Length: 152
Image (cartoon, rainbow, N blue to C red; front, side, top):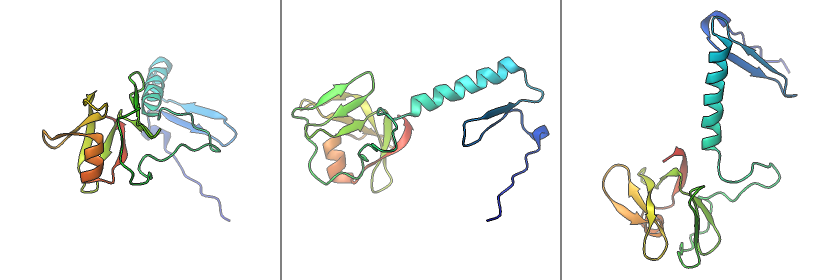
């Protein structure tokens, strides 16, 4: 097998970070102040942490994919909401990350409004209009739905 060699012209980049499989890191920031480079890397780290799902990443214990669930109805009865993490666990024990935008089968995008309906189900809002529906209705009428990533 021929190894792939990628050449980088460091004069074209303000900041280059490389890490090999053993975790050895090299940061090259020609013409950029070290303090500014550190601030940029902190901002990137904050963005990565904010986008991380609300469960640990362990390769041997992959979380249930939210869009691969059976078409059983979502129920608010017995549900609970973790407001800090914006994770709603339905009455069947499935966790829904409400910090993400959700895409439906027709290409529509939904996000959580920040409130629950009387049954305890998250109220969702279509981003392309003013439609508001509970999560169970969105899933039933427009599903299947899948997380799109990125904060809502």
